[in-house]
Image 1 (cartoon, rainbow, N blue to C red):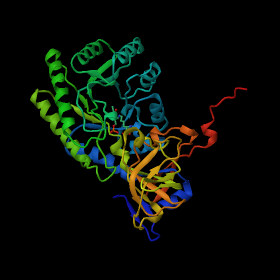
Image 2: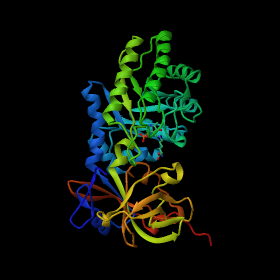
Image 3: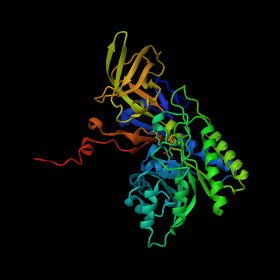
Image 4: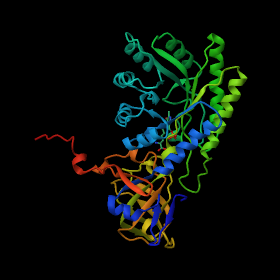
Length: 430
Ligand code: LLP
């Protein structure tokens, strides 16, 4: 990986530190984030818009990895924040994130969630469905406050990605369809005094490597905006185009430089706005994976092996689907190395198994490692997004620790859970 090197001991070095030493200090499984890389990714987006002279908000999609320290870094980089639940909003409050830069999503927002968003005067609520509108109408009935809102629509675009993570196609649980529902939502929102409609939102999918899907979506959004402009002069001041910018997990992936996505979005929005005689809106985006995905590795310790001649060699680690469910859920691919044998020839064909009681708990199929022994350290690349955030307690595994590295210094930012934590809500029934 571009981010790792090897030191004189033959150990892998990540963000300037010997990762074998990190496992001695913090144990395994361990998530290690290179904070400089997080900042670099964030700035690629922020600077991309700046360079083109476009007003923008780059909202970190905190579902990719939410923790107090992570949101503090997002704040330091001038990002906005996309939250999709009360728990993510609560984390933002705990991190002292500027509330006016927080955007709330969700396809089934509760009254409590919406009330919390209103109380904390967050920047924007992305309205997903008629239930949202009804609840907001009720909550705002005798308040003099106003809330900025966007209407989320499904532009019916199929992004080039794995089916399971498609959210922008027509048959989707998210957002209003463009044909009828969006207009009806628009009419209803206009009637509610406390709601200030800023524009539209769409999210076409995740782990997208091309810009054509975004371009098609922008065209569709502008057909709607052109209608509304004709009907009563509405002009969107914000267009939120969601996240989904792809990253490299293995050599098979060929993501674009992040600036290129920005350029494509800006070009197309400018073109369409011009075409319909509309003023240029602010462009908002919501990258999650592209900010944190390739900024982290996971470190595991290798334990047992099972060799089935002519079939497969299983090598088991001390984690698995409880800290990275993506291979089991999406057939996601990862690369890994043996961190304490970084210079050894890769002569051992094997597959890497987790330690959960489930056959599908496999991390990597058919890879090549050096000859492995118990106690070796496996480093898996590009695990910064949707790893820790989708972690579970299956088999009562405590969640791993998370470490941030910056300026050659490692800081624990999420403690490893203990068995006390795992059982803390269990009540006795004797
Ligand atoms: N905005 C909205 C409305 C979204 O639904 C998502 C992701 C994002 C932004 C951020 O997308 P990103 O830039 O991270 O691709 N668990 C799956 C990914 C689910 C994505 C859900 N929505 C995975 O591990 O691949």
